[in-house]
Length: 256
Image (cartoon, rainbow, N blue to C red; front, side, top):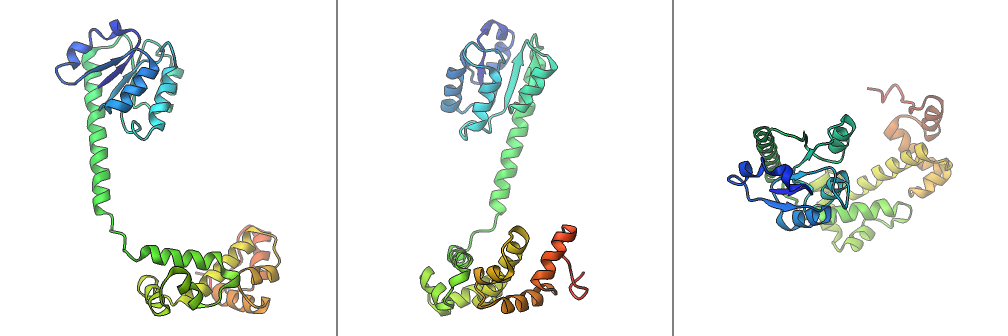
């Protein structure tokens, strides 16, 4: 446990209670306290608000911004118990604010409570990590292929082009998309062209013709046909619906 306080006499009634239970380290300056927190990785930190070299709230923010100390519970101990100070303490990342003069047994109880909560959080995080599905070894290859397709919609030369870029044979690339996405590579490209076209219709002032070429269609008519098959209305009608209502129009055939 780390105590950061420039008035050690304020802690005289507390330290005898803590020493039998915790290994204590004391710091009377903010910089010294931050360095010891980084070095010792204490289970909990008791921090005064008013320190000679740096405001306690700033110290708490520094601790919470550092991955080495971010998870350590910080409890403020301060004679300045104005409501705004208590609020600032919690906003800076502390889990509790205890006013001086304090009742030692209450401080001990609060410390034990926050240590239990921190332990429970670590256990939940560990359990969540253990339940996470292992990443398939071929996932990076699939991600690389999808990223290349999205970045080169306008000038894709076909499945062979994508396979060459990710270092796979066409046969293996096709199998990869079928196994993980349930799509052919050509099917994924077609879906991505329409999806990107929809986004450009919503977010830009590009003409339908420019959007069609930008996503890899040979002419606006082919784009309009593919878009209508997917959304049940033309690109122009989709954009008009956005302009009029802020929401895209939906054809009766495609409405849920």
